[in-house]
Length: 180
Image 1 (cartoon, one colour):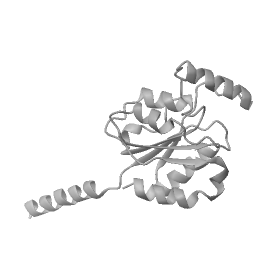
Image 2 (tube, rainbow, N blue to C red; image 1 turned 180 degrees about the vertical axis):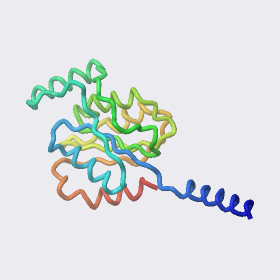
Image 3 (cartoon, one colour; image 1 turned 90 degrees about the vertical axis):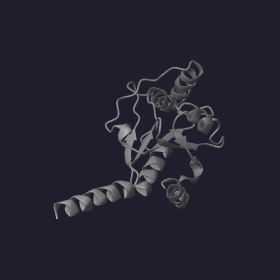
Image 4 (spheres, rainbow, N blue to C red; image 1 turned 60 degrees about the horizontal axis):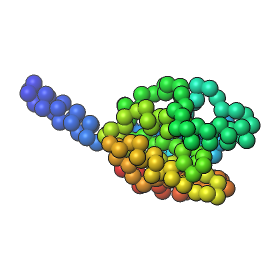
C-alpha cells in the first residue's frame, strides 16, 4: 500500500511539473507615466498572465522631451550603462521574459540595454516588444538579441504609437503564439 501511494505521488508530481504553464515576466522601460510602452506591457502581461516589472533608472530622465532626447542620444552614442533599480521580482524564476522598450534613435532605450547587458538570460525564452513612431522598430530586435546570445529568442512584436488604441487583437494573437 505504501509503495502504491509513493508511486502515485511521484507520478502526480511528475505530471504536475511537466504540465505546468511556463512562468512569464514582462520587463519594460517607459519614459512617461502614460507611455505607449507601459500600456503595451500591461496588455502583454494580461494576455499571458505574466508578472510585470518596470525598469526604473536610478536617476530619472528629465521631464522635458527635448532634454530626454539629448540625454538618450548621448547615452546611446557613448554606450553608457544607465544604472537601473533592482527588480522586485527575480527574473531567474521565470521561463519566458518579455522585454519592452520605446524606440529611441532606431534602437532600445538605454535602461533596456543595461538590463540585457547585466543579466545572463542563458536558457530563457526572451521575446522583445517595442513601441515607436513612424520609423518602425529600427535595429532594436537585432541589437537586443545580440545582447542575449545564449537565450532562446522568438517572434517579436512592435506597435506604431498611433495604433495603440486598436492593437489589442494583435497582441492577443501574438501572445497566444509565443507563450507555448
